[in-house]
Length: 197
Image (cartoon, rainbow, N blue to C red):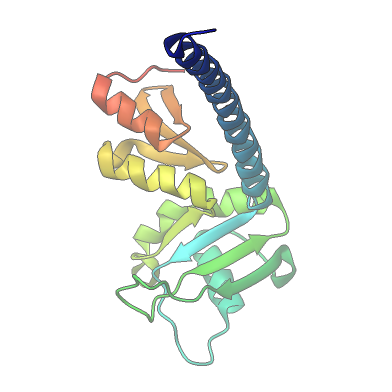
């Protein structure tokens, strides 16, 4: 007959092996999930590639947002027509909105080139009194927006920018680092080093 100690040791050994196996499976599953989430985020961001968000234009009763966007485009030096857009409308105010009269406007362009020209011209708003408090941003996915907000909060916000839905940190002339996660930002802060691509 086996001693109780031997039986217990064998049972513990089997459980330890099972725990090790399940831990490895869990790690593999988490890695696969991370890849799938990244793929879904990229697909969602690709679907938003022709969209821009416009902030800072006050809501007025019976407004025509298409006319507002066309006027803004004209102010930026662009020649756009109503049929250059898929859709234009105001988004509902968020719970955290301080000024409920300044709901953002989402603009979905028909062509990516028009969207890029509009976005590239955004700094010209500062030269016009009517639009000097207007900001034009890319339409980011929830995940990419979290990275963007986190980076601007914890890094030098003047060096954080987006391009085609991706978030970047300007490092030096012609050098920038793409930021893929909030964890990466936290690690960079802890190590105080950011590798350049």
